[in-house]
Length: 258
Image (cartoon, rainbow, N blue to C red; front, side, top):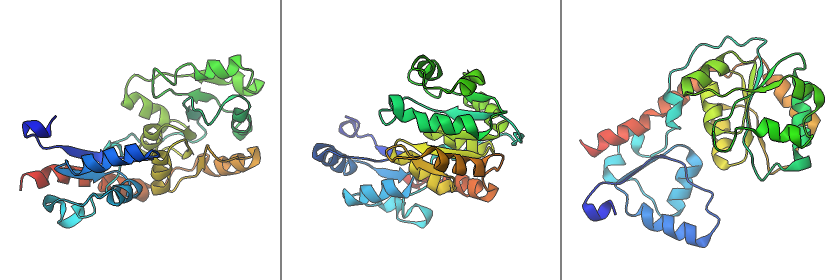
């Protein structure tokens, strides 16, 4: 519809995939050919786009835009200073089909043992999906008793409020992509639980531990990885590099108006 009106169409800082159906791949292949320019937030998305026939436009074929790959723009958000030594464990979890009923138990048992003297804050990032997850797990009798006693849900209204929570935490365990990114931008120690390739890609770029929810992880393996992260923020130069990579998306606009 936009192209029919003569409007330029951008795919801006886009994640792509997984595309499991032949029809989905065909539709995306057709739409990629209709775009004026594209930029991608991770190499995996750009690789998939190339497999589907995407090539940089003339405007993109110079300098850092040649590859069309940057980082998620949220990496460019300025964050507070970390002050969370000894602070609570923060969970940015979401309901997912990969964790149902008894499959939650090793994850919750590892959290229970991780830092038993610390408060555990459950921070929903999607009000319609994530709120109430703590109560649901309690109702299903899946939470260890001690973990339930020191758990509470916190509901920040803005990204900045969430970042202040992260900056005061000893570890953020994040399923939500932007929970992971905003925690790292806040200087907080982080580890990821990947329900989707975009979370895996962000964790790999940051260099933090990441556990694929579709794999079978034992309690001890999870506990070992998370204890290694506790009170140990990510390397500042890694975070700064990801913020710098976000400049690719700003340059995309400049390239449309040389």
